[in-house]
Length: 191
Image (cartoon, rainbow, N blue to C red; front, side):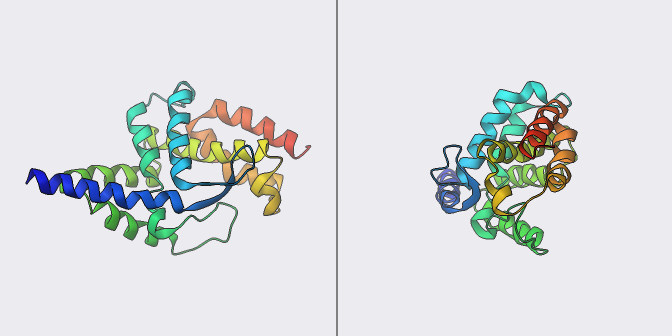
């Protein structure tokens, strides 16, 4: 039993290595290349650790960091759909199937815990998930501002679209971060 449990956990860890190959649209801040989804997840966990005091409510930082490390694992199967790219109405279904398959590699107890954390993030209703989702929007916003428009320029994204797509989620989970981000966005778009 112990060997099977360990073997399944190692299978999972080998499988999620593929997340390093999922290239996102967001560039690194030095603009040398696009970031991958594994880097994005790690960086968001660091954002949570560093910015926890800015959450809208009392949060469990360990749970938030776990959500952020798990939230994009489904991209191994489903790929990354950028917020400014073409929308895919089947993305939620693809991601749910991916979560079932990938977390299903784990022993039942870990499968259940990871799956529940992933669903909680996706639902965005708990205070922990709201903060995690706020950071998931804040980080690429920061990257776009500090790369002179980044994906916003590439996708012809307007000031109003940025406010609509980023604002409510960041405001809900981290109002102080949204106040700062809103000023950055206004300066960027020269409004």
